[in-house]
Image (tube, one colour):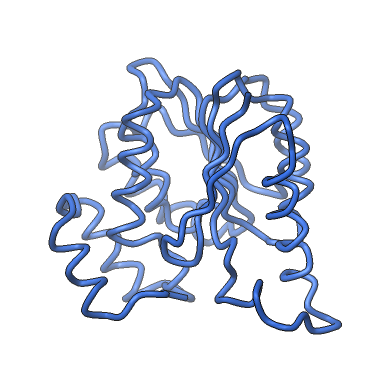
Length: 213
């Protein structure tokens, strides 16, 4: 869900850094060929992710939820010369699509694709992370957070996407709506957890930035 009018969103994009040409191609092909293209981060959020990465200058990045790889490439923009990105997704049919664009970028050899359930894969990655992007099944956000927090470097950043969940977080909770229930608990945890400091930004469908103390 977008919380701004189309006119304001257009104005914001026009007055932000231009979408890189490779990402524009990836954006277009995702909308042409892939199911649920609105899952793609898109121009404005992509520029936010790229800017954050450049400010952080991470050596190791973890992404939970690759989709077509748009956000992956944005996160790579600030990657250190010998850095690595581990990105996890469950959709086997997207692996070759992702790799095509990864290899067309300057970071192809730095990106490690993992296929399968993140909760089973993360414990096997022997790495401490500077930057993590959580953008997968909402029911497991709490589980992902508790699993990755011990693997974060001090001062590392955890980004959590879709935390406003189309505005459902301020609507009456429906009895069978597990995703919204978990996100409500997750947002409260990030606010109250003394291990991190957090700001929730109204970017696209909500983006939380949490810094590990």
